[in-house]
Image 1 (cartoon, rainbow, N blue to C red):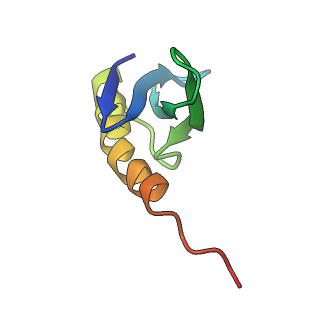
Image 2: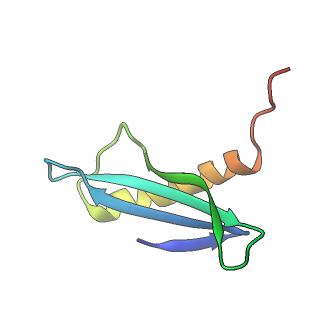
Image 3: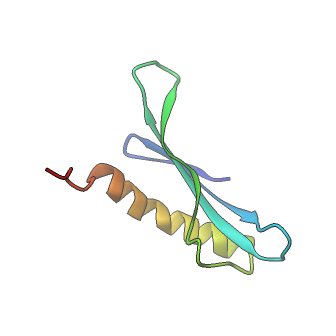
Length: 84
């Protein structure tokens, strides 16, 4: 499971075999620093991304997860405005 730091965020992207098949799914988790040293707040819990896609190899699924990280970070950085 690769872990990267992008800005202050710690991102984990991974591929996992899908139960009952020879296919793979792509998963992502994102954490941000907290006020407590040595602790991270989970801001996007481990979740399957590209849920409508299955991948034939671990490398393909991991690549899709890595690409999804950038879109998810954009949502975290720029949340939609709250309704009035």
